[in-house]
Amino acid sequence: MTALRLTGIILEGRGQGATEHAEAWVVDGRITYVPPPRGTDMETLLEGVTLPGLVDVHSHIGLGPAGAVSHETAAEQAVTDRGTGVLLIRDAGSPSDTAWVHGRADLPRLIRAGRHLARPRRYLPHLAEELDDVGDLPAAMARNAGAGDGWVKVVADWLDRSEGAGSVVRPLWPAAVLADGVAAAHENGARVTAHTFSHEAIDPLLDAGVDCIEHGTGMDRDQIAEAARRGIPVTPTMLQVDNFAAFADAGAARFPRYAEQMRAMFHRRDEQLRTFVDAGVQLLPGSDAGGSIPHGVLPRELARWVAGGVPPAHVVAFATWRARAYLGVGALAEGGSADLVVYVDDPRDDVSALERPRAVVLRGARV
Image 1 (cartoon, rainbow, N blue to C red):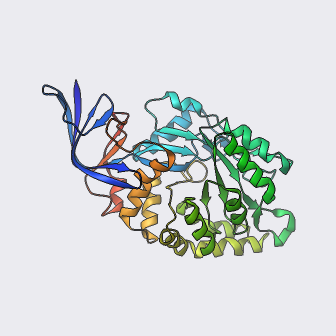
Image 2: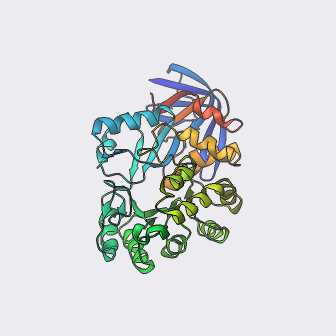
Image 3: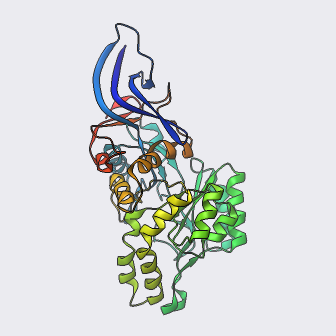
């Protein structure tokens, strides 16, 4: 029997917190804090700060700028993420059926949300299942509940071009239909996450009982407080929100009100990020990779949180054991899968350490 020995600081996630160990071993792909029997070969000694593998809850494996990509390209995307220490991905909508990733032990663990649900011309082309009749949403959400891994992704708002110069980002679905859709997903065993930029889309999502909010840039203090009270996390995707000023500039000539709306959200983005944390909202780490944003940037996203005012220790917790607990996946508990990353420096002191993993171990194998 051969074991991998870890020394230094090993952080075992326990729900919302973590326990520090000074030593651990990886045996047969599992983590243990009990020394292996005498005579066990020690394959490698890794010293440093060991974290549970990073989590990216808003990534799009199988999606490229023009839509669906080949299996080979999707695998390359996953390997790129893996190299940064991302070992668990919730795919937040993809036009590709990526169930085959489950059979690849060398790729990060994947939790699929199926395909985005939207309306015609109310989302990016080639990505979503587009519903001509808004009343079809509940049936589509029930169907998608069985097509993914326990998640459904709905596009709650997008630019409505029908008012010409007065066009803005506004909700896609009547509140009652949205509520029926969320209920249908829940009845079929799935949780619901929603893309939303606008303020107007948030109250119907909260009232419908949505489980997670992506971006959430339109949320005001009262809505943030309500999300905290209900335990609804938000994925702030700061690298994407940093693009809002450019989006506004690109659309300003045709849609000046839209441009004004996007610039307002851009300018208050750091204040809002701090408000989320102060209110007790759980932040979920998400790169939004797969479209205009490349894979492999989650450490940059997390550094952006710190630049926006979130303490590094909070960021590490949000990006590892707290995200794993929310998704129902282990975080280096005794006997659990050895999905871990080792760093020379402690990311809780300097978040830039996340960009310099010393070793990445997935399912007990150093990759």
